[in-house]
Image (cartoon, rainbow, N blue to C red):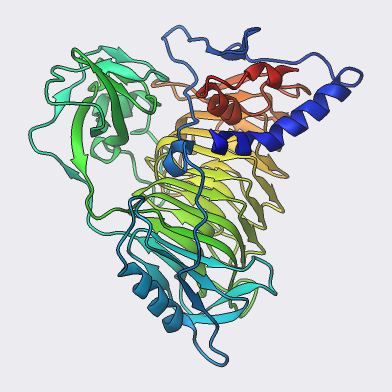
Length: 518
């Protein structure tokens, strides 16, 4: 609860200030027909003809937003090497703390990098849970790490080991003919072997008839174009069981892509991921990459990279000159919070595959209060990304390409109060790249500000949405695609101002949402 109150406190202060001036300056509040705050202060969702609703995106980030990012006392203090490489000194301190016994929360210790300049030749690795790496501030005259090297590398890599494994004999069929977006439950053939707390995969198979119906076996050819194949589009959504009622299973996070019997329906099975690590934080530092010239493509590539982790965080980092990302969450990064981070003055060629300022391939991750300059795809998801994921209260300036799902079929992303001097696009990318095709489904834009935006919906399997956007609408690169759901374009007084914050508040019964509509 304290975490929620801390998060929404700032936005509520702004809301109250605006509401006072709204009496004379702003028109009446506008609300979507899909989700409203009722006169009783309840958040209510309204289904479409198929039964799909806007999903609840609030259970993302560190411990699903139910716990505050912790602050722990310093365990080990490190000073920079006066002349030379500081990497081994930092690595030795991390390794020492990694050998400590974790407490009941999984915490081992905090390594503090004191104020100064640290030359780092290569990658710093954190491969054990419960280790925090922190500095004394993110300004250039505080704790500053310089990535030194003439090849592409991550300055800090946080990664567990192993891989996700299906628990043999646990797979059951979802028996509902249609499972709508937004629901938290479904029927299975037998729930006998499932219980509250089980970690499961909600599996949605790729099928040839589905590929055909969204026309991804008909992408206009050019050199390097790959048509989609069914085996590449089996989607595995990580969930946890919160209730079992007969053969009905209830899950913690909603379904974010409709499952239909005609496209293979869905399945559920238990999984393990023993090597995945948790409770790792990287905070309060200035990370920079050495570079030779403005189009240098062989230098520090990523500031902080997360993979095979859950319940981790990056906070208060200023990252400069990296060629790819400030923070990148890879395929097996789950429940990571990236907050109050900056990706500035990127150095690389301005071309495909580069400058993905805040990059997400994982699940249930939250990027909040971030800033980027001179990027291409500043807030971006990769291929077959299984949501929910959220980009909230983020800005991008001097952009060279668009924000949004960039690759093939990202599912369930909220772009909430994202401001850019460029574009946010959700569309069929067709032959772009190597044949990206449909970038995603259940992509929700809420109260964003853009130069212009295209939001299309695929021919089947769901919709994309744009609510309360300030900026120009344009049809997209390929103009004969179905339009997405657009409501409230250029409305000045969108309620709630943040869907993510409203949904987060709605999960806590003693918080009255009517304050968001005043």
